[in-house]
Amino acid sequence: MKPVTPVAHSLWDVIITSSVLSKIILVGASIVLILCFFIFIYKMLVLQEKRRRLARAMESLQEASSFNELLNLGATLGGTAAGWLISYGLKAVKAILQHGGEAKTKMSAAEAVIFQEVMEQGVGEIAHKEYAYLPVLSVSAAVAPLVGLFGTISGLIQAFIVVGQERSTDITAIAPGIAEALITTFAGLVVAIPAFVMYHYLLNAVRDFERQLVAFEYQFEWFVKRLLVE
Image (cartoon, rainbow, N blue to C red; front, side, top):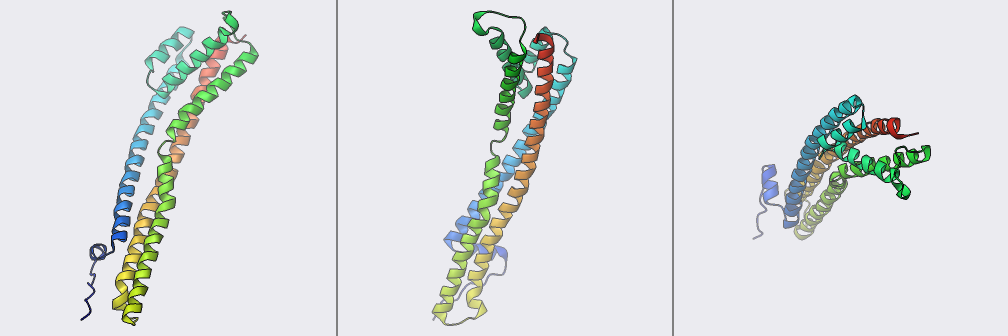
């Protein structure tokens, strides 16, 4: 007597009766989906806090009127993106003014251009760090459907094997394989769609923070040039 194929009455039954490969795909998809949500929530909270701090730093910088106030501001903002950028810029100013072994109190126009390039490099370093973890979301969005398709092909192969063994196209014989094929496709899309949306949402948030950082850089450059450029 041929073994009776278990009849799946629900989505959970399909998962329980699926092959080892499909179960691995489903477990992996669940882990990746949880990881994507964790990265998204973590990055959004961090970016919101950094943007608030940068906005307050911009207000403080606009109120500064002397170089000593700028030094105090850099010390106050220690540990933040704005504080790091001020410290980075002040080190660049010191290096430029002491270039050649002769201490100066003013920068030339050419040295001001060098200072601007150094500041742009500093902004680039900060912005580059903010793009961390975003590739996890983009790769998940791209790879998850392919992994689901892999499970789909495996399920269809099993369905056709059953058709060949039983010499019948009875739907009850091939339905489990087809259901297994569809469940892995479904899992891939469940991961890919949220990951795709979260990636682009975070990407826009990081770019907004980068634009805010560039605005702070311009304000800092203007302040330094007003005081130090001949």
